[in-house]
Image (cartoon, rainbow, N blue to C red; front, side):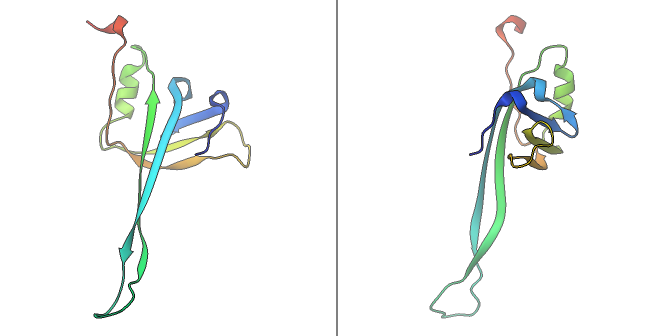
Length: 116
């Protein structure tokens, strides 16, 4: 798993920099299931090929009451968005992720001071 100092990392969603509200952790996981591609019947050996790639990514942000509605509109269930995270600047050799993701789950909780 790649890691870097969160003081120099950035996170953008659809071109909107959310680095200031990012809680400093992104947890990606991925999988690829093999697909059997054996042709014919009665063969002694089976053939396999790579299947479709799949993955999940968990991202935590912290938003206060003044910007909560902005983030609520960004993270809509089912929305497809471009996510980019990595080190700030044009530094080469560091891990950078850029790709489209689909929001499948949004959870949240309010701080005790904002509960009613």
